[in-house]
Image 1 (cartoon, rainbow, N blue to C red):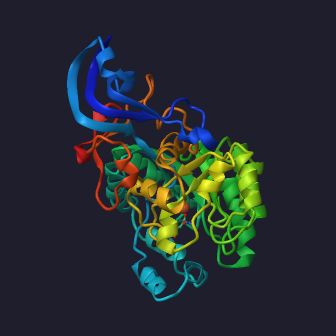
Image 2 (image 1 turned 120 degrees about the vertical axis):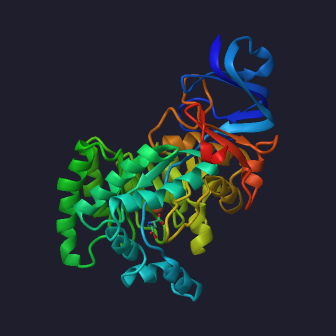
Image 3 (image 1 turned 180 degrees about the vertical axis):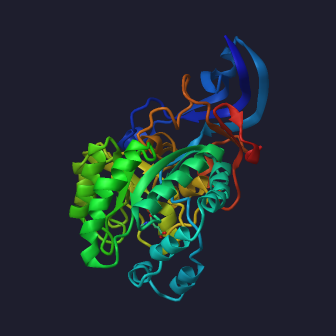
Length: 410
Ligand code: NIG
Ligand code: FE
């Protein structure tokens, strides 16, 4: 075999195997190959195995220097495009005002909607690029980015266009999602807005291929289950996948709706019950946990351990956003999940790679396997567990996407 590039000298090559999401005990079945090498042709892996078994030749050979290699991390939940900041909100929270109270009085997400409306599309892209670069430096190679800081069809579609422009410039694979975030303040305007979402935003996002999924924030103070069901049904009718932000502050039943509509994932879950854990475990919907929110808002942690023990497929995301999770590191999200949500190191790696890809409906990301895009991270150390152990320094040495070393990480 002739490869464009051979990476040898890998102490441990770690990956999940197979495209199906891993659930329950299978989340601990990580393959760890020692003294490994990998070969790349045209941006894809073509061979992976023990270095001594490689018998081909390669245009270029790189020595990983006895360091560990993991699949490129997949961040399945970010709000990386926003303008303005939430520093005043943060200070208010430090003085005892809650996130929900700030939102209810017109601040929080609504203040980010105002700041985002005041920025040009180019400014939004320029603000988001360094955030994506930070996530890539932390090991992420595929990153979902949501809209959601708009309060009109035009504003949401403009955000989606900014996400597309970002995708063209960003050193990562970007997956765009249309997020229907907070309703109009006036109760009387909600019905008209739901119609605009179903009859204008979703059809246009689908037709113009601006989003692959629609996400709805179901919560007291946000959308009801009934409103979300109409919007997610419209999404499915237009061939888009579905997701929900739900059971974040209160047990509102968005989880049950997600299971009913066959959502790719239900995200947050800090407030979910034992019955809901069992229901999710019996479904094909991925449970996406967001430990940055637990840390930043001081919320209870989502029951990651219980979900896996019940047989669910769990994914981890950063939820990078200015209000509930200013977390610019997917590596740190994994490191928090093992501490706050009770995951093992193996479970966290699978939750941040193969299962996170499944939460985006992707079968070709988050694994090191012949035929898949050559997205991987080389660590500084020989033991891959440093990825979930390290706090406050970056255990990721460099990141490769589609067989190319990302310059910002080299
Ligand atoms: O995932 N909870 C709702 N939405 C986001 C927060 C967005 C914001 O505060 O700006 C979340 O936590
Ligand atoms: Fe979110």
